[in-house]
Image (cartoon, rainbow, N blue to C red):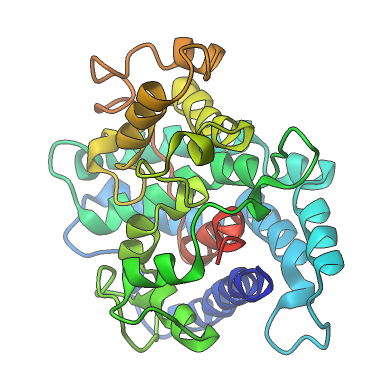
Length: 322
């Protein structure tokens, strides 16, 4: 649990380090490694503008501050108490304000307007990856801040073991901290490679996807006892509610992070009581017809620092399971 939290903090710090280095590089180069070439002018312009968006900068700063005690170079020794304190900070009203759902939704809508082709008809994997991470930020933070019926943090719930997560992303059954970090991000241009030296930090979508990390490692293979819990309900409801308010533009089946949601949802409906998801099922009414899992009008970009930090803060929930 504690080393997993350190991973989140490393990603957070790395995101801002990359943001600073990229800003410096912008003065001497017209090419930004986080913006793919060959995309529309409107999409390129939007991603560049997003990079300097003050409201998102405030959100990212707040998220970074929440996990700063565990950042690289910190002298704080991680304990269960300091981890819980960080969670309380991450889930505070101040971050609710700085990273409001309305803010995220507005950026998602603007993303779709500027990059509709790259997200739907002429899909560009790098653009969708950016969309994925920022889109995931809000519901994953909501999931990370949820608590079980006994009042404990859901991110501390046992969903899978460290070895199971390791085996999902590596040939080794056990991984050290440095190895886990290497599996969490890759070089730009190698986003789906499982191992790579890091120059321009990009989330390793394979790691997050294969471990079902966005859903706090809850996965369809769990038995009813492990799957039919209040935490599973809170996690899936967080995503369903968010998607109902602003659908995922490319369609969840095209998501590099969230395409496993359909299988998780189906497993829950098969293994759990009929009323297990309550209002969430009604909100997801279009699921079986492809509603939430098909293309829709929405989108959000997380750029540069976002691309690491979104999955840093958002990944907080899942990371605790390691």
